[in-house]
Image 1 (cartoon, rainbow over the protein chains, first blue to last red):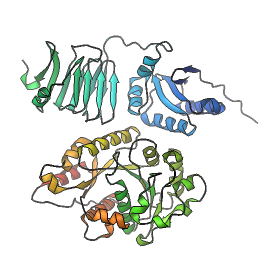
Image 2: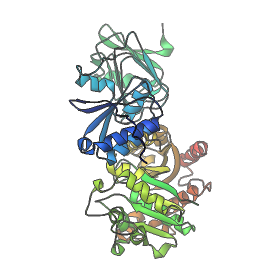
Image 3: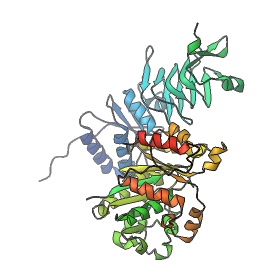
Image 4: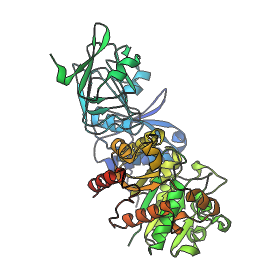
Length: 230
Length: 267
């Protein structure tokens, strides 16, 4: 006796970069199963396609995303983006090299609801940002850990590192010159606030290995050591 | 008793993954363990050469996965070292020939019968690397004490952590204490301070390694090789023995300091 197939077709939308599938709520394993059977039903359509999934508030861990990506890979479907309203999910997706709402929205402003962030927001990352990791954020970024060479943080707000900043950072990405960059030890590869960068090597060589804040004062990058505050 | 599945990787090419996989496998076999080592570097196979087994290849990893032979037929028994087997890579295909789930399936089929499955990963962070770490329960990262190898190792460790195969363990390979003394090479402390993972061994630079690779006789079989000794120690640490680091230079104190880090970063 055949079980009646659950009518669980998730809405599909095509856009410039690929196919957007809006997944439902509920147990992740079940949702995945439904997604896979939906794809299997129309395998010819999905073969070779790039797929983005919209998961709303759901929090997905990197391993869950990896598993889904690999499972889809076996079907020759490429998972390239995870769209969500959860910042934790966004950070996890970015660490997996997956795109998120921000980057997809940029390319397709007409196709989706805009996710406007009112007021100031900040994200706390309690880990070391390793080489190859790029954190892009609208707001302030606080890191409890180091930023290793090859790691980067790009944000519209300020950057606070409770650790060693040895990678690349850009605060005030959209032009805000009031943003600051603070670190316990600063030995960066690249450092910018708004449109001003440490191109001048003298500034870098002068940096001592102790807690410091970099800000813009009179159009120039200024170093304030913590133990030298007025 | 199911096997422990360990993948050996690095990010950067040429730092010593294959040499390490070969030598650790042999060292474990010499300690009575049953080991299968798998070369997952499809298209650029080397593990067979380093082990001196290239003339015995009939079937390879891709043959198994594509169903042209049974797993046993591709497993080359190394008669020199008790319970050691090699599954070689294919030379005439490339990394797209197999997938992460293929590797997981293959390891599941042999894991009940052996103590260790060691997988030699290709360089890079793409498909070949992903295939190699898919079945891993533990990942060993090899690096050389130089800025660019360490940069790549950091990246790889980050990927391993985000794929939840972490935390990785580190082997620092080709350490040259003479160059460190002259300030021409990073010391192990510098490397560990950046990578922040547990150290499982330091393998000193040793001329005998190149010769061994060329003749297909792994350097762990040489009593007098310092690198061989280091690999034997790594194997023993993997079996749970607490072996102190080789004291290469007691005057300098570098290794004395490192032993302290090693012990504090330990379990």
